[in-house]
Length: 138
Image 1 (tube, helix red, strand yellow):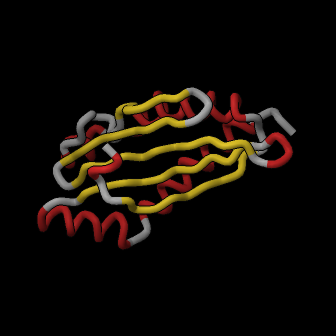
Image 2 (image 1 turned 90 degrees about the horizontal axis):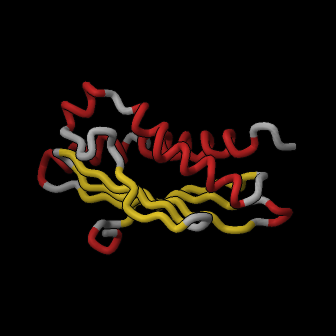
C-alpha cells in the first residue's frame, strides 16, 4: 500500500533499550493504546475504517510494524521501523504516507499537515513507546 500513497515525512527517536523491549512496547501501543484512545465521536464524524483509526497491515517482529486506515478525507499508512543503535539502544522511526483526495481532502491535509498537528501526534507516539520501553531500565 505504501507505493500507492505519497510520502509525508519521517520522525525518529533513539530508545535506550534493546530492540526486543522496544518491539514489545511498540506492539502494545499499536494494538491496544491507539484503539482505546480513539474518540467514538471523532471516528463517527470522520468515518474512520477501522473505527479505531488503524489496522495492523504488516508485522515483522523486531523490525517493522505498519498501520493503515482511511476515513472520508484521507487514506494513510504509518510504518514503524526498528534498527540497532549504539550502546545496545534502538532507533525507532515512524514514516507516514497519505493521500487526501478531493477538495475536502485538501482542506483536511491543510488542517492536519499544514498546522503541524501530524508532527505533534507522531512525535507523541514515539515518545510514548520510548517511555514505555525504558520504564524500569537505567
